Image 1: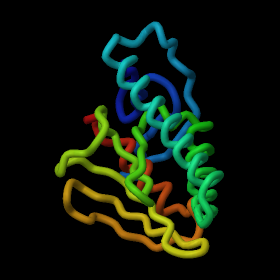
Image 2: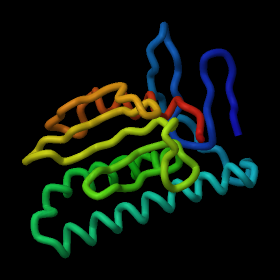
Image 3: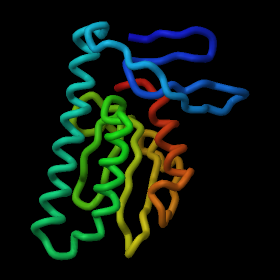
Image 4: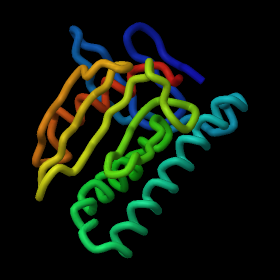
Length: 164
């Protein structure tokens, strides 16, 4: 369910993006009762949340059972932090081999025209972060901190796109 007016709108629960002169700012908002949502919205949020549980379990299994997968601990911890902030209600996540994929896709797997963020550990403390706008590499960063403003900005941009 959408609520708001002017440049300020909110969807279900989490954070509100407010446009101010072309820039978006996040503000804490009141959580809307889950009962106010229609069945399709509840289903989508449930699918998003399930993807986070499965992806975290997959990272935990790899880190705990295979030598050399310790480099994924920062990505796993970043996922847990995002989940604590309620992002599991806004994004689907998954992994493809060594890459974390964050999207607004309702279904598992991405079509070629869907936007996503891909994060890959490429060395000790280095991460390749790419924002794909369909099949076009829209932004490409090499980061040493997953809390970098560039990545957080990409998450805000992706969050502002329609669920697909």
